[in-house]
Each structure stands twice: as structure tokens, then as C-alpha cells.
Length: 149
Image 1 (cartoon, helix red, strand yellow):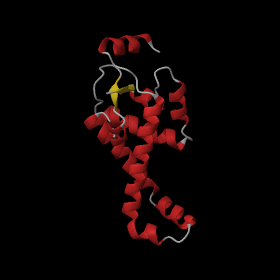
Image 2: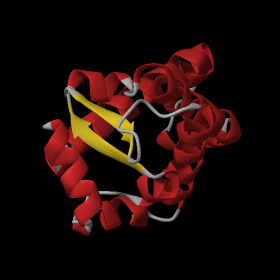
Image 3: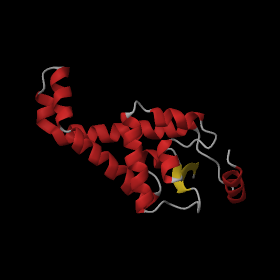
């Protein structure tokens, strides 16, 4: 772990969130957003007769779904320092320099790079598992840490 970050966290009594907590928060957020997509597509989704029809329907709204994910992540991180999944898991995102809730630019940067990482077969998330600071690509880009509340 970076000594400067380690000293800062230790002096404030802050502990990095575990990979397990981050994974559960990710799962909760993805389920909530998927449910919102299904609700938004409404009748069209339920009228689909095959899995292929459901996939075609969801692919038609891919850009809207990506925009929804970016807005969701950026808004909740900027406003509360945590998405609903992170709140449920009692973890939050903090700016690594000031250990406070990220501002709008940092939150937006983090949410966009998070989507890029997802599109690249979740490689940025795997990176975060192996990183000593548990920083995924979106954390490194935005200079954020995910910590226990």
C-alpha cells in the first residue's frame, strides 16, 4: 500500500472496504439498475416470447442504460459518497487526498471509467482485487478509495 495513503487512513482510523463488501455492493446496484430497465421497458419486455427477443429489446436501449448507470453512479457518489448498494454494505467512496466525498468532476470521471472497465470484460475490477489499495481502474483514475463507514 502507498505509505502516504496508509498513514492518512491510519491517522483517521479509516479502514479500506473489503473486496467482499465491494462485490456485494456491486451486485445490489446491478440488480437495482436491471430492475429499473425492466420497469422502463414495461410491457415490451413482458411480451417478449423468447430470451433472444429480450436480448434484442435490451440491446436497443443500451445507450440509455449506460447513461442511466453513469448518472446513477455519479449522482449518488457526489451526493452521498455511496450508491444504494454501498450504503447497504456500509461502505463509501472518498477522495484519496482529502478523505471526503468526491466532487462532481471526480464522481463523473469515476462513473465513466467504471463503465469503460465493465466494457473491457471487467478487467479494471479484477485489477482492484489485486491492488494493495483495492483501487479498481475507476478509483485510480478518479483518485478515490472505498472505505468502511
